[in-house]
Image 1: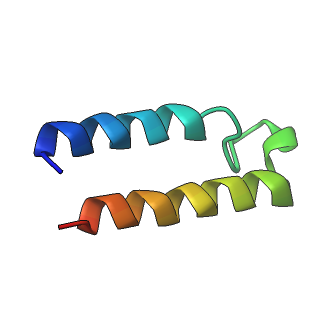
Image 2: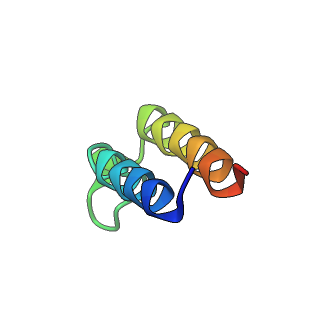
Length: 53
């Protein structure tokens, strides 16, 4: 995977993560297990992509 491809994928993950953000100050709807799981899952995918050789 090229750096350009990796960066494009990571940018897309950031965009998708913003659909269900976790713990946005002042927005108590974001303090839920669903949002937490969503962000944790995307973090795992992001980590895999960043470390993919």
